[in-house]
Image (cartoon, rainbow, N blue to C red; front, side, top):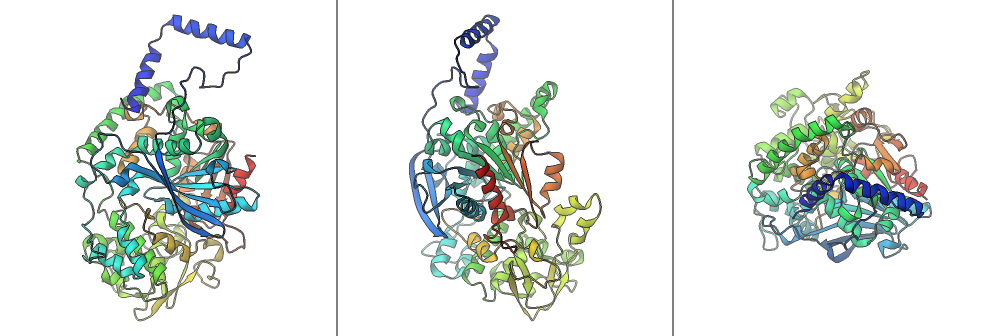
Length: 598
């Protein structure tokens, strides 16, 4: 019997109790009051909480930087017996653990533990910056906290071997040629990107699996609910905030709901909710939406299991597996050979997916995009860049055209540039009323493109942009040296997941749409995160605040802060020291919120 089935069974039994049973309950309550009993909500008569199903804890120290110890922690927590065939790694779950070197070696000894769900496609190393910065800021405030950057189970399918081999050889082209040109590395050849029919195991990695994985690792380290309620601050970045909202309202049986496991909640450029438009507050809407959405969700789940629906973004340009591998390879190149003239693009095949991706990410005008540079503007392959400059072209907020992966990393240097107008110029965000909503097109900042094909373009880091006419120090917040290191990592998990499960997105849609039976039967709480202290950090230059902040307001008593000059990813990837001389505002504000909890 699955957990969802057990929850439904218990619900049917409860509803089948007769009035005599209710009368007995009323009498029991009255006797309890007379006897002076103190009954905690949700705990009366509950069965004892079981031990965590996660076993075989393993921890490996990866690094120590500025007194912050980073380690990879994993547990054996096998998928159900009926799960499709999968690598052994998919039977383990874990996180990256950040703690002070002088703090307690055992997590139970930490003052607090931040546990974070990642955004869409993000691996645990996505949060490397904010994790270290939050622990560092908390230390300066007299607290020794831990930060756990969770890795979704789907990271077990990440492509990391080519990165590991290149990090050993010191040559980034080893990884590029391994993945794209059939090069053999250490006796191995890349078998190719997995197709939809090879990814059936992702059907077992939806919302229920993600939430139970988080709960089991929390329960393993802190076995009692009382301990967890005191120590854990449950957070999420982007899509991870939504997942954290589901966690808060998910019923974990004898242990209570997810909100019962957390002292507080936090969201980074996101919201924590499983019901953003409050459908569950109106009985008619609650029943109607459940009746409509649950059957539709069932059809979609059947489609996944039959292989009729795409299980990942696959080969979709800009969002697909090869695009996010390209970001990682660009980071690897900038990490291993930052000032060398890049050969990355020359080693990439000229196939339609890659060409369209590069064209969309970098084109300066609509005419240039339509002609792939043949209009005279030239395509990005026709220019010369250092490896660091190429990385900046692909993800910097003054260069790249895809807003959700932009970061404020610095500025292009070494040659002349022209302002971009594709897909929209940065100035459109200044239009009254609708300007802030147009951020989603390409961000808030002016973007530039090179014009001299003979020049070798270089990069000026975030703390060296004074005098650049299209940016300012207060809008450059991330260190491209650190970002390239993070992007270039291999094992134990990639910065961007190779195969992010779309099943998780469908599950979020079902829950938001009102489904509370079937796959969502355990989603029995109603905005329980709002019963605890809340912290929300919005990025000042992100497209998220105008939508989330306007349509789905934060709890009335929440501490809401704006991080000026930060982009969406910057909330978890900013430099330790900002251009105003202060610590990363995202980590510092979160640490101050944690300190305020007492």
